[in-house]
Length: 590
Image (cartoon, rainbow, N blue to C red; front, top):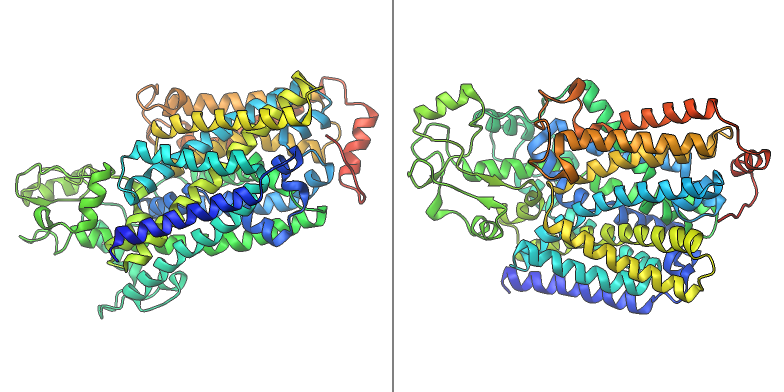
């Protein structure tokens, strides 16, 4: 069979599997729709959490970031995994014990304030919508390439698939679908990595292959070869830091706090039976996540080396140094059709020059070779993982497996985010504040309608994305870190914190973080509407917008403590409630 047939079978087969699971696990009550009936085991929930967590940003975009940023992408690895440790130690078991299965419900009950609940809903929707943009971008990239349709059409197909199993099954359907999606995506990520590691280094484990010598007899280590290849073309060394240590540290912290504060992950810990199972679920999720995250650096490095050696096929300056455009491989032609890879023959020699023309020193050298600028004008970072098996000439079934995995990763997280948005609107806003007398059937209908609306918004923003997937997702983490995480942490560990303090803190943290993002990314992250160029030269104290969430969190804490100090403490009953959260025994509040 040819590659495209394999792709149709793999992607189509996975869709059939997801639809069957959704039909068999159709939600018949709000308990099923919101928390899967609360009967999921810790191992299964850990696997579902891992799939919910490992989004298009993890599967598609993170290795692409590593491929182009090298060392500077390390905060994404450390922050996204380290945040799960914070979640396990500081939040998950206590929130599960409290019993309010959404973030706004916890904040509303803990601070005895519908205003606090409303602000939490606002924070949740802002962070979740920003996050889901990256997932829909990933859906469009995967479908656009592997179903050979336009990017926009790919997003629409993804919307339809998510609609079926999310609206029909709710959390119950999403949970069991995500377990299947985890199996698909982890095989899809690791199998090609093993193939390519063997191909380049002779070592089967990619984690070890990253630090191994090349199998071509040169005696060079893989990373040394990569450094030499890209620096010969004017790019920075793969293993050298670009930004300040402060920026790297705060970006890592922002991603960690954002991970611990993301509502679509927190809600997963209400699908288990007991408080102890919530902690076990986090542990299992970390195990399942580590399989992909320890493989990603190798995938990124190997993808970059394969790309560079494909385009730069001979030593710099040689007559045949660059790839002949007319003889470009099939994978290059295929990705050109998506618009995510583009070439412009600026000097009319029929060959592809790919180098850093913004490096003045190398630009002068390149001019001596007759090169007239970087001719690979578009290389979308989000294509690197999906294109890597094709660049490496792997078997067709492996390419198809990657297609199914990329789609699974994007759809699994999109579904979780959409459910978090839906429950915030139907349960926290409608049921808890606007229409408390609504029936369970009416609330279930409202939840499904809210999810349909969220899917439409997510699809529109996915078709008009402000950046590549991991970049947009990092902004979402900053928003969650600056608004939700401090409110949860203070609600559990500081009984003196009152409603005035937490409301002021959330608004201050969210507001300052959005303002900083708008300055450098533009209004609603639309390029061209920003007041300052998004470069290190203009960033305040050298902090990129993705790293500002940690500063926003610090502002949140400072404002919350300041306002709390000059206002009345919460009632004695509320303070006893906070103490009981951390004490053995059962507690149920909503």
